[in-house]
Image (cartoon, rainbow, N blue to C red; front, side, top):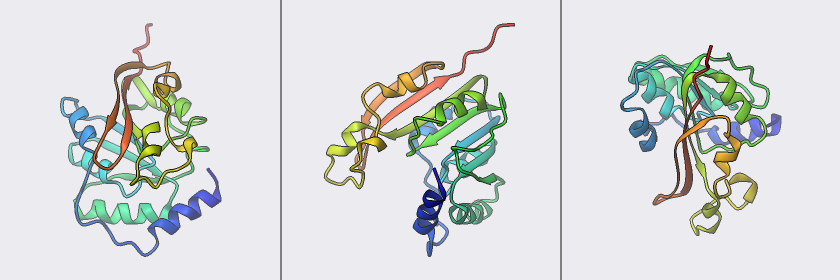
Length: 193
Protein backbone atom coordinates (compact mmCIF):
# COMPACT_ATOMS: atom_id res chain seq x y z
CA UNK A 1 0.00 0.00 0.00
CA UNK A 2 1.10 3.60 -0.17
CA UNK A 3 0.26 7.18 0.66
CA UNK A 4 -2.09 7.10 -2.32
CA UNK A 5 -3.93 4.15 -0.73
CA UNK A 6 -4.19 5.99 2.60
CA UNK A 7 -5.51 9.09 0.83
CA UNK A 8 -8.01 6.99 -1.14
CA UNK A 9 -9.40 5.41 2.03
CA UNK A 10 -9.36 8.69 3.97
CA UNK A 11 -11.35 10.15 1.06
CA UNK A 12 -13.87 7.33 1.34
CA UNK A 13 -14.51 8.22 4.99
CA UNK A 14 -14.42 12.00 4.53
CA UNK A 15 -17.71 13.54 5.54
CA UNK A 16 -19.12 10.26 6.87
CA UNK A 17 -20.71 10.06 10.27
CA UNK A 18 -20.32 7.42 12.94
CA UNK A 19 -22.38 4.31 12.09
CA UNK A 20 -25.61 3.94 14.04
CA UNK A 21 -25.99 0.15 13.85
CA UNK A 22 -23.34 -2.40 14.73
CA UNK A 23 -23.13 -4.91 11.87
CA UNK A 24 -20.42 -7.51 12.47
CA UNK A 25 -19.85 -10.17 9.84
CA UNK A 26 -22.35 -13.03 10.44
CA UNK A 27 -19.73 -15.69 9.60
CA UNK A 28 -17.42 -14.18 12.23
CA UNK A 29 -20.17 -14.46 14.84
CA UNK A 30 -20.79 -18.08 13.88
CA UNK A 31 -17.08 -18.95 13.82
CA UNK A 32 -16.14 -17.58 17.25
CA UNK A 33 -19.29 -18.57 19.15
CA UNK A 34 -17.56 -21.47 20.93
CA UNK A 35 -14.14 -19.86 21.41
CA UNK A 36 -12.79 -18.56 24.70
CA UNK A 37 -11.94 -14.88 24.39
CA UNK A 38 -8.27 -13.92 24.14
CA UNK A 39 -6.21 -11.52 22.06
CA UNK A 40 -7.45 -10.68 18.55
CA UNK A 41 -5.86 -8.82 15.66
CA UNK A 42 -8.40 -7.39 13.20
CA UNK A 43 -6.61 -6.42 9.97
CA UNK A 44 -8.02 -3.83 7.52
CA UNK A 45 -10.73 -3.18 10.10
CA UNK A 46 -12.48 -0.26 8.39
CA UNK A 47 -15.11 1.27 10.67
CA UNK A 48 -14.55 -1.43 13.26
CA UNK A 49 -17.82 -3.36 13.28
CA UNK A 50 -16.07 -6.70 13.84
CA UNK A 51 -13.51 -5.30 16.31
CA UNK A 52 -16.22 -3.67 18.41
CA UNK A 53 -18.36 -6.81 18.43
CA UNK A 54 -15.36 -8.94 19.44
CA UNK A 55 -14.55 -6.50 22.26
CA UNK A 56 -18.17 -6.83 23.45
CA UNK A 57 -17.59 -10.59 23.64
CA UNK A 58 -14.57 -10.09 25.91
CA UNK A 59 -11.75 -10.18 23.35
CA UNK A 60 -8.78 -7.84 23.73
CA UNK A 61 -8.68 -6.37 20.22
CA UNK A 62 -5.95 -4.63 18.25
CA UNK A 63 -7.58 -3.25 15.09
CA UNK A 64 -5.42 -2.04 12.20
CA UNK A 65 -6.37 0.06 9.20
CA UNK A 66 -4.54 2.39 6.81
CA UNK A 67 -7.09 5.22 7.21
CA UNK A 68 -6.71 7.53 10.22
CA UNK A 69 -10.07 9.12 9.32
CA UNK A 70 -11.77 5.74 9.33
CA UNK A 71 -10.20 4.87 12.66
CA UNK A 72 -11.39 8.13 14.24
CA UNK A 73 -14.93 7.17 13.27
CA UNK A 74 -14.36 3.62 14.54
CA UNK A 75 -13.10 4.95 17.88
CA UNK A 76 -16.22 7.09 18.33
CA UNK A 77 -18.34 4.08 17.34
CA UNK A 78 -16.59 1.96 20.01
CA UNK A 79 -17.22 4.71 22.59
CA UNK A 80 -20.95 4.52 21.78
CA UNK A 81 -20.81 0.79 22.57
CA UNK A 82 -18.75 1.28 25.75
CA UNK A 83 -15.89 -0.96 24.65
CA UNK A 84 -12.18 -0.45 24.34
CA UNK A 85 -10.33 -1.34 21.16
CA UNK A 86 -6.68 -0.54 20.47
CA UNK A 87 -6.93 1.29 17.11
CA UNK A 88 -3.71 1.26 15.06
CA UNK A 89 -3.26 3.40 11.93
CA UNK A 90 -0.76 1.49 9.82
CA UNK A 91 0.05 0.34 6.33
CA UNK A 92 -0.11 -3.47 6.45
CA UNK A 93 2.84 -3.63 4.03
CA UNK A 94 4.99 -2.16 6.80
CA UNK A 95 3.16 -3.18 9.98
CA UNK A 96 5.47 -4.70 12.60
CA UNK A 97 3.27 -7.26 14.29
CA UNK A 98 3.97 -8.76 17.70
CA UNK A 99 4.89 -12.40 17.10
CA UNK A 100 2.91 -15.32 18.54
CA UNK A 101 0.57 -12.99 20.44
CA UNK A 102 -2.90 -13.54 19.02
CA UNK A 103 -5.37 -16.37 19.53
CA UNK A 104 -7.43 -14.92 16.67
CA UNK A 105 -6.65 -12.95 13.51
CA UNK A 106 -9.54 -11.66 11.37
CA UNK A 107 -9.58 -10.21 7.87
CA UNK A 108 -12.68 -9.26 5.89
CA UNK A 109 -12.98 -7.75 2.39
CA UNK A 110 -9.27 -7.17 1.95
CA UNK A 111 -6.72 -9.03 -0.16
CA UNK A 112 -2.94 -8.80 -0.07
CA UNK A 113 -1.08 -11.76 -1.50
CA UNK A 114 2.42 -10.41 -0.86
CA UNK A 115 2.65 -9.33 2.78
CA UNK A 116 -0.44 -10.60 4.57
CA UNK A 117 0.26 -14.36 4.69
CA UNK A 118 3.57 -13.96 6.54
CA UNK A 119 2.13 -11.23 8.79
CA UNK A 120 -0.76 -13.51 9.79
CA UNK A 121 1.56 -16.44 10.47
CA UNK A 122 3.83 -14.28 12.65
CA UNK A 123 0.88 -12.82 14.56
CA UNK A 124 -0.89 -16.08 15.40
CA UNK A 125 0.02 -17.87 18.60
CA UNK A 126 0.44 -21.64 18.28
CA UNK A 127 -3.08 -23.03 17.98
CA UNK A 128 -4.43 -19.58 17.04
CA UNK A 129 -7.18 -19.19 14.43
CA UNK A 130 -7.43 -17.17 11.24
CA UNK A 131 -10.91 -16.14 10.09
CA UNK A 132 -10.65 -14.63 6.62
CA UNK A 133 -13.33 -13.73 4.09
CA UNK A 134 -12.78 -11.79 0.89
CA UNK A 135 -14.09 -11.56 -2.63
CA UNK A 136 -13.87 -14.62 -4.89
CA UNK A 137 -13.40 -14.70 -8.65
CA UNK A 138 -17.18 -14.97 -9.09
CA UNK A 139 -17.50 -11.38 -7.85
CA UNK A 140 -16.25 -10.22 -11.26
CA UNK A 141 -19.34 -11.71 -12.94
CA UNK A 142 -21.87 -9.97 -10.72
CA UNK A 143 -23.89 -7.13 -12.22
CA UNK A 144 -23.97 -5.39 -8.82
CA UNK A 145 -20.19 -5.54 -8.29
CA UNK A 146 -18.00 -2.46 -8.03
CA UNK A 147 -14.96 -4.75 -8.34
CA UNK A 148 -13.76 -5.20 -11.91
CA UNK A 149 -10.03 -5.88 -11.43
CA UNK A 150 -9.11 -9.59 -11.20
CA UNK A 151 -6.17 -8.70 -8.93
CA UNK A 152 -8.69 -7.87 -6.18
CA UNK A 153 -10.35 -11.29 -6.07
CA UNK A 154 -9.23 -14.79 -5.14
CA UNK A 155 -8.99 -17.52 -7.71
CA UNK A 156 -10.49 -20.95 -6.91
CA UNK A 157 -8.64 -22.64 -4.02
CA UNK A 158 -6.10 -19.77 -3.88
CA UNK A 159 -6.63 -19.23 -0.14
CA UNK A 160 -5.26 -22.71 0.53
CA UNK A 161 -2.00 -22.01 -1.28
CA UNK A 162 -1.55 -18.54 0.27
CA UNK A 163 -1.96 -20.01 3.76
CA UNK A 164 -0.39 -23.42 3.17
CA UNK A 165 1.48 -23.29 6.50
CA UNK A 166 -1.81 -23.24 8.41
CA UNK A 167 -4.15 -26.18 9.00
CA UNK A 168 -7.37 -25.62 7.07
CA UNK A 169 -10.43 -26.20 9.23
CA UNK A 170 -12.97 -24.85 6.76
CA UNK A 171 -12.76 -23.52 3.21
CA UNK A 172 -15.74 -22.46 1.13
CA UNK A 173 -16.66 -20.32 -1.84
CA UNK A 174 -20.03 -18.79 -1.04
CA UNK A 175 -22.63 -16.78 -2.95
CA UNK A 176 -24.18 -14.18 -0.65
CA UNK A 177 -27.01 -11.86 -1.69
CA UNK A 178 -24.65 -8.90 -2.09
CA UNK A 179 -21.27 -10.52 -2.90
CA UNK A 180 -19.33 -13.64 -3.87
CA UNK A 181 -16.73 -14.63 -1.30
CA UNK A 182 -14.13 -17.17 -0.35
CA UNK A 183 -13.87 -18.11 3.31
CA UNK A 184 -10.95 -19.60 5.17
CA UNK A 185 -10.95 -20.77 8.76
CA UNK A 186 -7.46 -22.06 9.54
CA UNK A 187 -5.31 -22.82 12.57
CA UNK A 188 -1.64 -22.29 13.22
CA UNK A 189 -0.24 -25.67 14.23
CA UNK A 190 0.81 -26.01 17.84
CA UNK A 191 4.58 -26.24 18.01
CA UNK A 192 6.22 -29.34 19.39
CA UNK A 193 8.94 -28.86 21.97
